Image 1 (cartoon, rainbow, N blue to C red):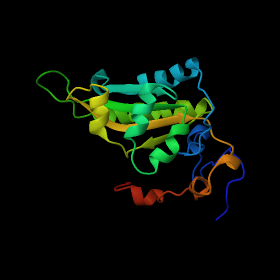
Image 2 (tube, helix red, strand yellow; image 1 turned 45 degrees about the vertical axis):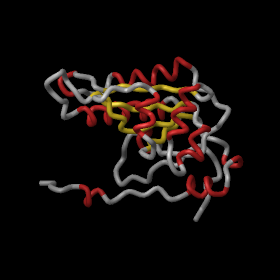
Image 3 (cartoon, helix red, strand yellow; image 1 turned 90 degrees about the vertical axis):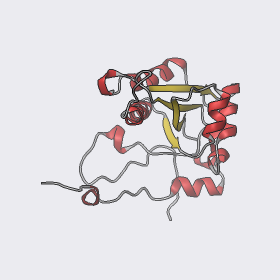
Image 4 (cartoon, rainbow, N blue to C red; image 1 turned 30 degrees about the vertical axis):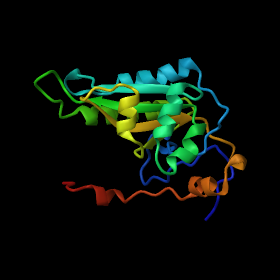
Amino acid sequence: MTLITDSISRAADTTSPILPVLAERWSPRGYDSAAVIDETTLTTVLEAARWAPSASNIQPSRYIVARRGSASFGTIHAALMGFNRAWADAASVLIVNVAELDIDDTRQNPWARYDLGQAVAHLTIQAQHEGLHTHQMGGYDAAALALAFGLADNQAIVSITAIGVLADVGTLSKELLERESAPRTRKPLADLLLVND
């Protein structure tokens, strides 16, 4: 395995050209624990999420935004599971992504989680454009987070996003460096197309 030697780019080797911001997006775990995201940039990243597509413009996406050093950040970090807890404390921001599942008292929104996913994707690409990196996490104690932040029964935690600045590779542990250096792979496009007439 070839280890990465810098923190600049791990651009995807695509079979067809895609936007550079998409090709350069990857999910690091090695964040600079001293980096702070300025409020203007963070607001821009969240604004991108706000303007993502939404079925019937219901906009079911909600976010718990926690900056490193805050009590909320500590609460989120404590609820992470497995290896996520070992590295996510260095991220500048942790965002709990929440879907409001009801349209009103009588109807559920079948597209709530889908719309939240689109919003988080927009957030991710805007962050990449701003020179930041994101990592989506599914390993967390949802019940603990819902209790800690007083979420309603119709508010479902779907994922947590870490946002930050890449750390200098020289500061990473051997285990983290190996994970950051693992080859980027995807299934062939043909394997993903159920029908392509």
